[in-house]
Every structure is written in C-alpha cells, then in structure tokens.
Length: 182
Image 1: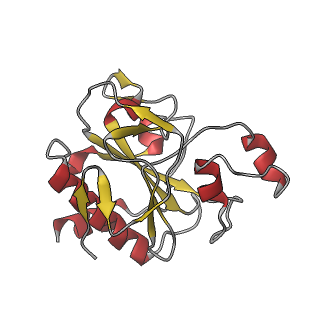
Image 2: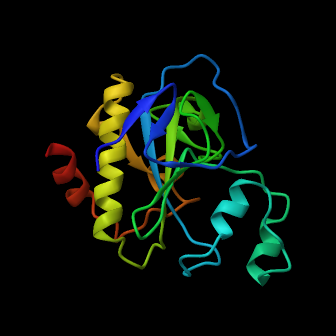
C-alpha cells in the first residue's frame, strides 16, 4: 500500500499520540533509524509497545516492565508483524527513540532522524509484510523529505554500537534495498 505524508503525518497509518516528543532544533531530517522492539520481550501482538510510548505501561503487568518504569520513549512509527502501522509522533517533531547516539560525528541522532520501530526481536525474522510496509513508509518519507537518501537508512545498532543490537542480525537489509528500488 503506498503511503503519503501530509503535514508530518503518514496518511493510512493509525494515529496514537505520544507525549514523548519535543521540537526539533532546526536541523534537517536526513536519517532514518530502524529499530526492533517487542513487549514483553519476544512476544508479539500485545499492547505493550503502545503503552510504553504513551506512558501507560503498568509495571505490575509483567516482571520485565518493572525495569521500564519511568522511561519516556517514543518512535515516529511502529510496524506490527501483521503490517499495521501506527504513528506516534509527527515527523516534523523529535521523537525520543535513539538515546545516546552518533552518526558521522554528529551526536543526538533524535535531532535529525526519523525512528521506525518494527515489532520483532534480534533472533526472530521479521515478516514479509513488515518489509513491504517499511519500504512503503520509507518511500513516502523520501518523497516528503528529499534530503533523505537510501544510504541514510540505518539500524539502531549503527548509531549506538555496543549499546544497541536492533534491528538485529536477522534483519534483511538486502530485501529492504530491493523493495526500495521497486
């Protein structure tokens, strides 16, 4: 499904506003960061990620959630395993997805990047429909933000090496590249 962006919103995606964002410091958006997340870890289809990004995660729901208590994070997009897409933060705003990060000598990648979370785990393959939706979202971002180039689509592990491993070794970068060329 082709997506389009209007005023920083991905038309065709569900919208659930996250309070975890702020204004960008005037820098051009020129990087896309791909993440992988599942809550509880290695379990799919729950509302854990939505609750995390909206500050509604109950630490009593799962032992793992206790370590996330008070964490304030978000991403611009979340792509579930079934291909459904949720937008949490307007692309023109700064989502809090990258944490301590560095790209080509520039720290604070949240300032100039768009964060896309895929429902998954490092050691579990992502679904074909996730790759298709991811490519459609990225193509819409390329159209809306011409300063984005295909070479500036990286994993969280690329901008936070040693600290982050996502989207993981099973993420198929070649499949994404092929889909972006179609």
